[in-house]
Length: 297
Image (cartoon, rainbow, N blue to C red; front, top):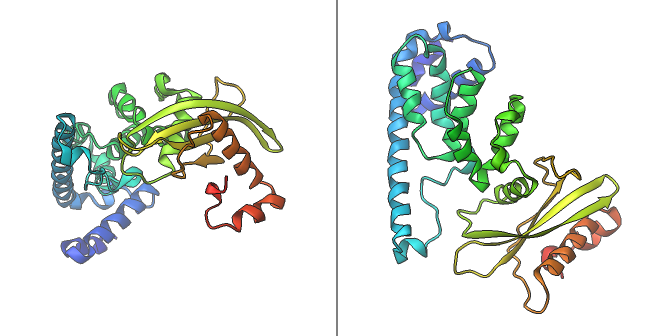
């Protein structure tokens, strides 16, 4: 370094070398001065990634417009466009470029403009990564950005975890700082569903076992609006209802339908008892011997 950066002129090496550069900068092994002569190339590549992001945003906006207008082809198809494939970990490439450009924020007026354009995206993963990067470097951004991210079930718990890592959890939007909201997010983010059509709270119960004490929340969800309700649960949240966590000790989204002859709450409680039994060595072998023990009851 910096001679190895010359390999970025070759497409076969560009991504690997740029990712290496990001890792070295993020870990503090090298400083901005060590790659300052590469600024122009990095900024150009970052602009290319920004254009790709903006294109995906436009396609997603068009998809949502068609869905809202009742386009049957769109409404009946599961969401699996390029926009959503990366999920929680998407947006890493442009985030790496943003991190490499951050040291030049006060040195080149083009960099703040680049970040301003990034913050106009609607991609939750990218926005979350950029918000954390700006917060880490004491750069200002509107609180509405965190509100937008926290409003999405898939990203709410991840956002809280990232803020807590930075010791900035007080910035987490109070509107979504409830056990129900956090348990719901932990459950949804545990699976790689393209989209959740609908989700509702059924109830909650208190669990008091050895090393397992707190609240478990029961939900019902649909992958698409026309589907049957499926069973879900998430916990364990703290006994004190004013406290939250991102625990995934008890999480279930097993595509199990509710039976018609028993209440949803009763079925959920039965499923919870089954899952708690698997936490005991004496019962775990019994249930795990089945290829799909979640459907045993």
